[in-house]
View 1: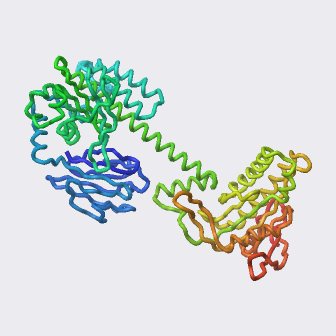
View 2: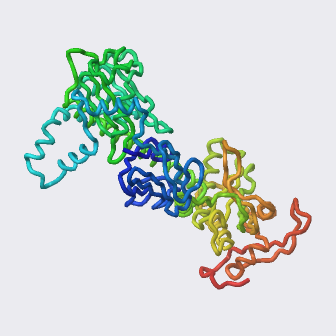
View 3: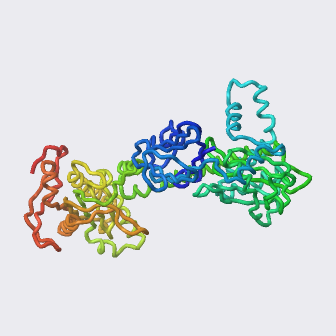
Length: 537
């Protein structure tokens, strides 16, 4: 059966069935194959199978589809083709095999000593047992052969709730199955980036050493390509294994190979074998291994989803250090839509600098811990004021703070927001000082300027930081250094964009360090009435 192996992104390691007809790939709930990567469109592409012809079509996706590195609109597919859905790589596989492998595979499927379970039939059995109106007789026919599973599944449930890492959990589960079906060895194979199987875990009854990887590739390929669970009960005498050195050298008499299956996906294979002449696996053993394989796939999927949630939360926590919660959510939404609002570009922004006046004098009688507590209290007040106005906390600089209004997301009133933020800072500082002893009270000064800057992520591969650079930034810093304690100084551009909203006091042109020309400076007056919307200078 043709399949699509996802070799990267959030669904890496999954192998999806491809049915006859049209298979839609995308993020939408109606898609045949649902991929959760943010650059995948709701209906991204389709793979059609008609009369042995395989074709992929891009469904006008935002980020395109490529086959073997070339962008496509529609293209026929061949076995082994590499498909890129946006940034998510996948490998297209048919059940194509070389002559020897195909003949051996047919022998495996047709041998009287082989028992097969199609995992789609197992899905149907599960659906049957979940139906409310199913007859007692039909349910018993499905459940009765599986009664022995209850003990194993109960033990597996205990393992899964112990909070162990995935590899340790899977090793414990393999050990449980080896004991319960009286196997000698157990293996887990996962799909590699090229769609091939790679060994992940190997265990044996005597746990002193890990067994060598000695598994028939014929059985592995057959189980993976045909999506069947396989039980062979007479491996030594069966002609189909005459060229399988692993079967012969280890005197393997019986083998079970089951897909790690989850709905319409296969994540890998679980294999159990035995070389005990007096014991061959039974169909009940096959049923147990198949049910356990489903539980292992569930555990792998649960761990993948948990890691995905943890990664998303970590991203959110990082954003919340610099952006207000609303802006952080917008940034996360932009990433989901494969937009990058943090890319480098020109923007008009308003920059605010605030610092503590005379911090050295204030802190000289404080212990290091008291000084740290004082600074953290100040920074908390500043951050709250910035986020209240949906500004961006650029950085803490010694005993000061730098904030941006207008990046990454602009507002029509960014200059007004910056001034309101400065007033909030002073109000919060006054309240903070009421609980501080005499001599340990804080005073601040604030400078604000508006202008064109270059904004975006700057740095190296090891460390990136979102910030803005440009003359407007330097001017804002110089205005802060000119300000007296308790005052807010702004540049002419900021005044032009905020006039009519506050009282201002013109201070004329002032020389500032680093600029050849004097800068027009205004002071924001803090004695403002409650309704500021219609105030003029």
